[in-house]
Length: 215
Image 1 (tube, one colour):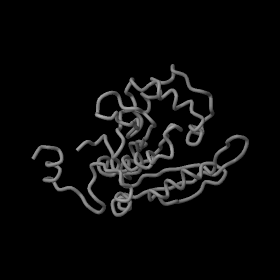
Image 2 (image 1 turned 180 degrees about the vertical axis):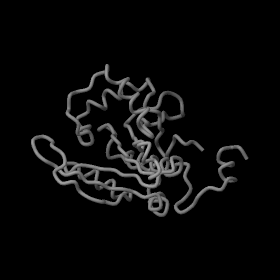
Image 3 (image 1 turned 90 degrees about the horizontal axis):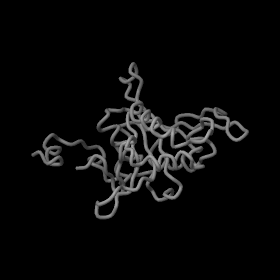
Image 4 (image 1 turned 30 degrees about the vertical axis):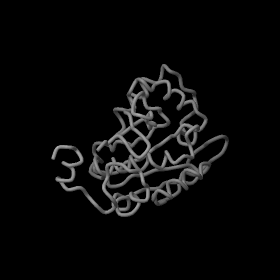
């Protein structure tokens, strides 16, 4: 059982210095503006170590999404980043987190985003004891909303004209997934092939021992 693998993907911690060049390229992709609505000031290599360190310490989870090299030899090829926010200390008991994901344009529309989101949901619900995972998108990115809905996220509201972007006001759509919804139906439909058991199931101690090779 490999916690850091799904059907086609591998996940590497964000502070791995071998991927700094990729992180720089990702942050300067035009598509980053679909999810990051801070002022677009550009991104330089000088900012990369500090940025990845902040992500590693302030996020509950932040991983490079990678394609393994055939045969298992060589450095996996990074194609994106997936993250879960860390609940504030006085709010950890609520078990809520926000998920964010970005896939570099070359590898979009291949199902990698769906698979990585499914992996992050499995990790959040099965290891971090989350109860609820939120995700958001903006009105100029309807493709993201369709993807999140297909995975099983339910729309909970719209913040009207919440974002100023390219000379106009735009809406922010907010969606969420509850752990019972994920385990009860959507996990199986994602076909991510993580360590997780089938929908509606949990592992016994004996099954975990077998999967971990400690029986």
